[in-house]
Amino acid sequence: MEQKLDLNDQNKVTVMLMQALWGAISPNFRLVALALSEPIWQLLFVLETECSADREEIEDVAGEFDALLLSLNKGSVKFNVQVIVSGEAISALDPSHWRTVFRRRES
Image (cartoon, rainbow, N blue to C red; front, side):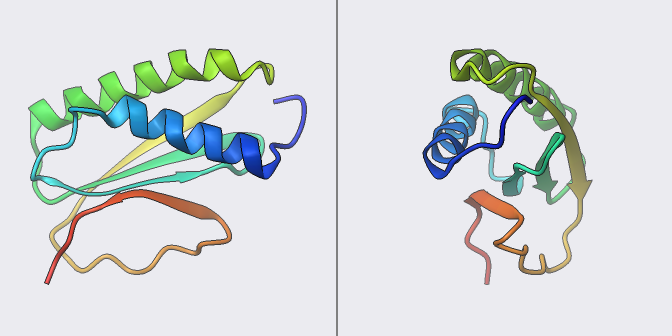
């Protein structure tokens, strides 16, 4: 990416990820977060159990998110997708690094 994102562009990217998630979230999804760290952004998905259908949805989300980023006009954007399968408690993510886009209510 050629230049650092301002707050407005960071918010646009977050909304783009929310749009890409539309209809993809299943009850198995526990958390979706985004880190806009340079030079490679991170997309984090936490699933409760392994599920091939949810893995396919995550691939679709990544593809749609990539397509939506073209409208940002900020040059080449690279991101990695990390999927964690865990039923254990999720520790709080550092808000200076991560933007939580979805988090399931858990007791």
